[in-house]
Length: 124
Image (cartoon, rainbow, N blue to C red; front, top):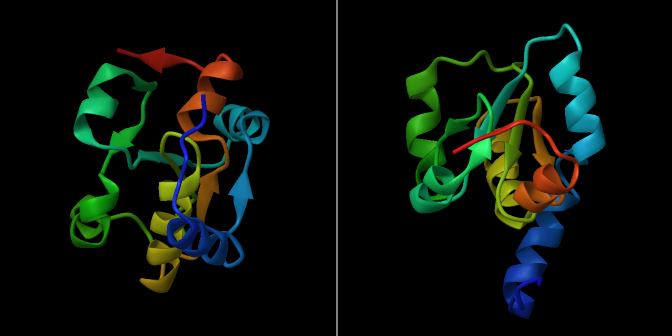
C-alpha cells in the first residue's frame, strides 16, 4: 500500500523529478546486464537497507548523501542509480547529487517496490 505524503513533500519531489533522469526497474535490469560501469546507491534508512537490498548496492542514506558521497571517490560522470522505497527520496537525492556535479545520477522510479516486482536480485 502506498504511503500518504504531504502536499509540500510531493511538491519538492515533483520539482526534483523535473530536473533529473529517471529509470524504471526494467531499465535498471538492462543497465545491470550491459557492459557499462554502474553504481547502485540505496538511499533508504539503515534499517530498510539491512532488511533487504538490491544485490551489490551501496548504502548511503539520503540524510547524509551530500556529506558522504565523496568518501567513495566516484567520478563526476559515473553512472549512479539511486533507489529508495518508491522513488521519492531517491529523486530528491539524485537532484542533490546533480547539483554537486554528478552528471549521471539517475533515480529509480518505483524504488524497492519496483525492484521486488521486477524480481531483480536481492540480498538480505
